[in-house]
Image 1: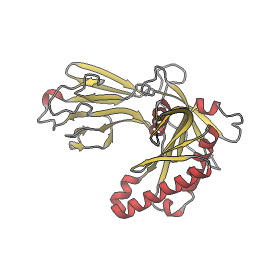
Image 2: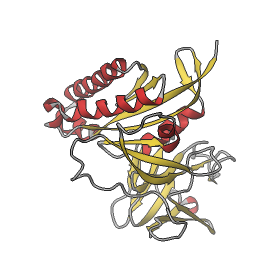
Image 3: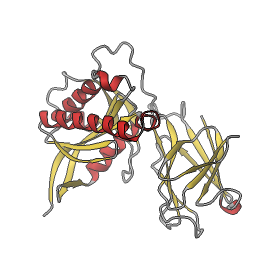
Image 4: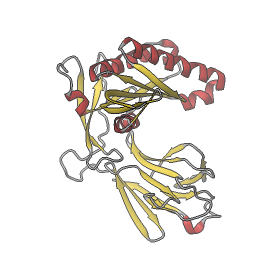
Length: 299
């Protein structure tokens, strides 16, 4: 049975876990990640929330209202930052949250609010909490929380960008670095970061406000690449945490060449797109000369 109700959706994931597996080994890294997720679950319960699921190094929670979710997110950051067993491995978390109508079904949660909260988490940097401004506006007394606007962000399925805020949880914020803004606050082009894509005569331009850009054989993709070795939903390019990245979602992998570096194969992984380079879906560039995608990042 499905039930729709307003909830605060929170996503938190561990920053630094990839390097942890490289330096500490799978067993110890998994133990530390599980310990962090366990600590986050404990904080969730203290604030009246519920853990919906954990996926790898990420946890998804719900709270009955914005104040529980926001205070819970602050306590999550403090809990991880003040634990020496996590600090020595330079582990931290990033959090995104949003309050809105969600569909509860089979002990899981779906809907627009979930998508928005996940987008907020993708924008957050380590030791940061990003929330929608609309969530803050629902509080009757927001004076207990320090926040600052970081502009707007695009969310897939939304016609217009939404206002977002950084929830400051550190006791001493004198050393907090301002978040790189993901938008044009004054409506001008100043400070816009662009990604130019060139494919078989097409020139496509993305900026910080562009929605996630899909590549694949599916006709509904932002860029359709019609080749038998390309998956229907092959890869995704999006702006998050201050830069454009490409993530592979395919069977055969995605090949990326950054500048003069060697060609890199991604498989269910992502990489930060820097300066200029070439992307090839499903096969190496040598085997796939007719379907390579050229990119260039710049201001």
